Image 1 (tube, helix red, strand yellow):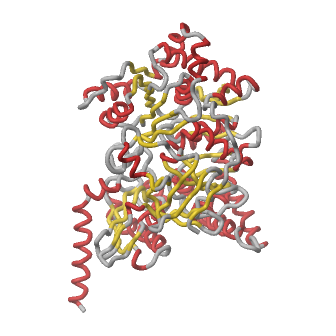
Image 2 (cartoon, rainbow, N blue to C red):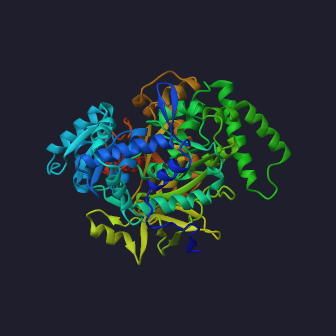
Image 3 (spheres, rainbow, N blue to C red):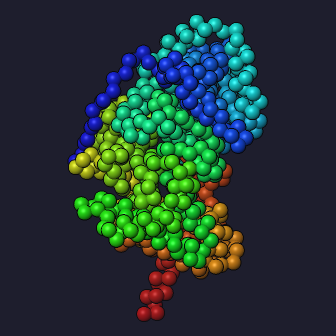
Length: 612
């Protein structure tokens, strides 16, 4: 099959906008709890009436600050309730919020704020404010930026006080003028190559896609007690979509600033569904294993994990799990699996994973634990999801069929093309890039994939990342990298081999996981640099490579690897803020390592031939 479309199921009044749904909640169910904010160690409930009053007050403040219809408002902050309130206030005032990752450098912030022509910027901390001030000094500066407000210094209170002079009628007029066709936000792509491009997304992109997703995944949102904890950065399109999705569903959303804090907050917030990226699911799995402490407990964990995976795979067979497997699964649940559910808050039933491939092993593991993981697919330019697995029919290893109102086509060269309600309207100030992104009205995703007979999409790689070996073999690096990264010791993996005689890999070690892994294996502590050369560590990394190689042909398999002394991070520039490896930069900066890598391999082969 080369094309599949799912028809629309929901029609929306074109005069509606995102904050109309906040107004509906406040008028119809004013005591409905929309948000919970952590104050100290306590989750404080914020109902619809409180939320609307706060949003309207801040929206009036933006108007008083001179923010006009369509003006850009930059937001630079970690994930927290104030981020969402600023987003809603900007939309309510007819403005266009533009997210900036709080980890951005001055030059990165300057490009986004200048290209979007931000009039006001709201930042989280004094350090963020200093970054924006530094951005003024970058070439080109920020000539149209009028004001920088800091959340930690009371930015929302300041705006609310200023807004007292703005009438309800003026605010209502601003809000009423916004409809589905109007620009909601400009989200800048992660920028793995070149300068980030600003994807223009409309209120219709968010509203229509969210309503279709809520209807299609109704079992996730139907329970009145349904709730989710948001911890991925709100500068990322996936988090922004979640923010709107949960608002429109009328369910409760909590905020926490990062993954580490989220793991602790699950226990007190008790989410019923979790939306995250695969790296989080890998870390939860690896973290639980690391905490077993080695010995018998580690063996029991690995046995239970294997049982969970086998049990999940059996669910996809006609006969289902055998009686013996069911008994093993009950024991595994009692000893291990129930503890993992408890670590996730004890009430989580569903998870949506997106942003990168989850991998079949983790998908089956979490289903075996009792968490139904709905893997999906999408990009910044598609308002996050185009596809997602359905609760009533999950195909692990795929990203599901298109959501209603979306069509997927596979081009002759294997590229995934998309069309429908999620597709952005173009790149800001960049008509050339916009024209290049479309083919006969279809958005070119740059990803490669295939559709099965039911319209379920399987991602096979990234078009620009395909490696062509000296022997002419085309190799998609992502499946190999994802499999190797699943090992608890591995932080990042970059597969190499373009125009080379075989495939190799650069790896980095996860410094957080290393101490626990060494202790569990009865080894003395060592630094990352020492571990990179340690025979025992390298033996286990080779095991990870061997497991990855089982998934591909010999021509595609990794024949050798090199472990780098330093990790790839956002801070050193090798990861984007959404935690994607900047492959081109890695290959450029470590070209000498790769060159030596292949020279050493060639010398080893030559020596072997001479000995024979």
